[in-house]
Image (cartoon, rainbow, N blue to C red; front, side):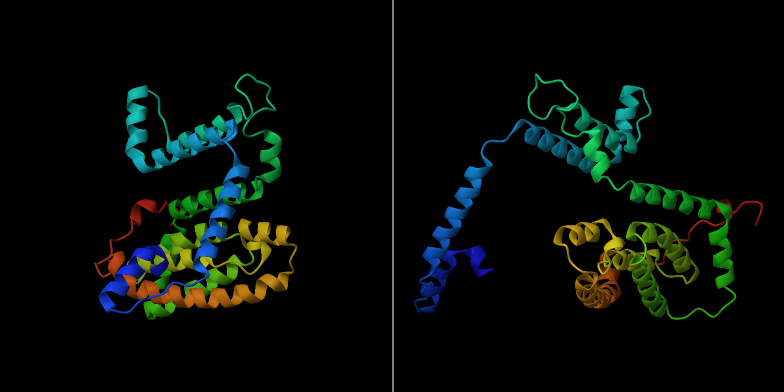
Length: 289
């Protein structure tokens, strides 16, 4: 905070306290070194190139659509006369990267594009895309097949434990499974069941769902847990033990902080004290059940 307030804060402190607060003698040298380093980096960057301008415009436009929300997409569908979905808008921004030139507006060769199929094929983790899509489909099928209703009914046959113990158990199971499978896949499968378990125990769905999502973000022990781990493991050329030991420590500390935060600030931020809504059951159950 003192660094942010700057030298004016130090001068005012000296005047009001009656004591002269002397700045470090190395401060001027440090400031000059920082300014020199920043100016050198700025000179190396030079002017914005054409591909950087196009990427910036595309990024700003994408964020504007996200800020406007689904109402913008609905109005776009009404005025254009075509059925436009949110996924079509995201795909359109990606297609623009294949169309816009990278070096010059007058070079129309397909290799002169912001994004080429060769680069996309080398960098895009297609297996994660397929797994995530499969999990979304499975989650929908579980809801419509009546499996979640069957699990809910079986829960009523047993004495329900304290919701806090269930939340801790969900966090541990999710954190362990995420180390052996992609965290996106695990969270997509576990989150709907956590919500229905909360419905059975008459607690707010976010009480369990937040624990699932937080535990999924702590998958940092093994390279195969998420894409970021794979990138770090490949670029740093590190060993598995170099990631496992500190990752386990961070996982334990992060899990404890997550449980404490949900059971304290979570009730205030998400209004989890209010009686939770009931999730639909009968309309999701097919004739087989």
